[in-house]
Length: 172
Image 1: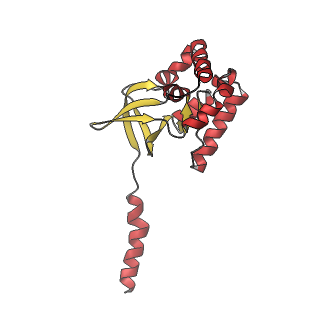
Image 2: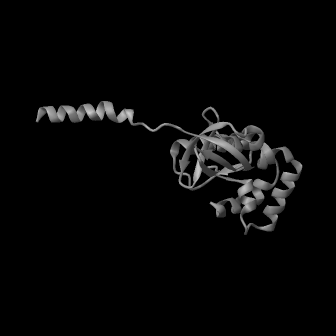
Image 3: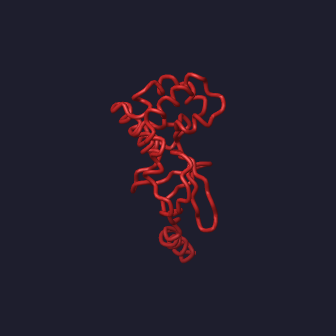
């Protein structure tokens, strides 16, 4: 009986850590927008939307946003054309990226431990989703969003943040 207990303990202590999952590495195929990319994992194609954030691109894709918000976003995008292609300049096609899948979205590690969502937030191109429940990500994402507000970057440098606040809450 003692041998069975000892073997069970050994299995728990030594064998289970060896079964830890490897990080998912995916090759970037296409950048559709700042918040949506297509990756290849083996022979499968996967379209990833940034997890835990609502981006300006996503807001524009949403059919029933009010006219004031839509106009503010279009004016912002017209005045800041380079920000429309931030992800395209940051991510490189045919390069491997570490991805974590969450619900129907992805966490894409764009620069080491820095996620693409954090980069979008820090540049004022997204807001933290109210539905985000992961405390660690909420902390990191809210800090990135605070830096954008403080430095008046992206939507915080224009009327987009105030004109679209209600719309951000609807989309989530």
